[in-house]
Length: 148
Image 1 (cartoon, rainbow, N blue to C red):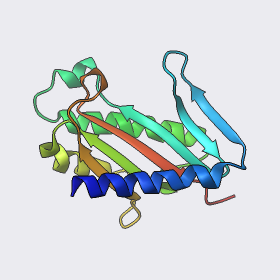
Image 2: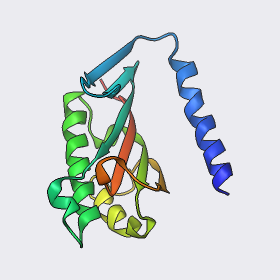
Image 3: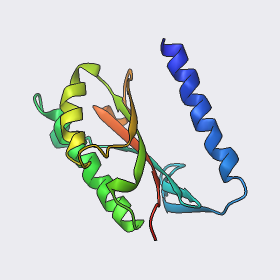
């Protein structure tokens, strides 16, 4: 089952670059410390890099850590989307990485607060062995500019 999900995910991701080959690629907020950019835009499609919500404060928490980190991540994405002239309604796909799958309900409750009822993007959520910097959660999005 895990192998099938991985194969399907790779097939879906591989289709995007084919469509984008003949269009101008625009990099937003390139990092000077790491080989990544906060967002890459090709036409009206935006790939938003994964964000962590871990801080010294959240890492010290025993309860509510995933909720706090999810809020940190979503607020950070809100600011990035606004800078790009987008909002959460433009998000079409999310990928959530959890260091502990038992925190799914806690993440999901906070995540839902950022999307209008019935208008949430498609999403995949996976449990991972670990995240950079001891994070409990990482989220990445894809967005499409749909209006003027």
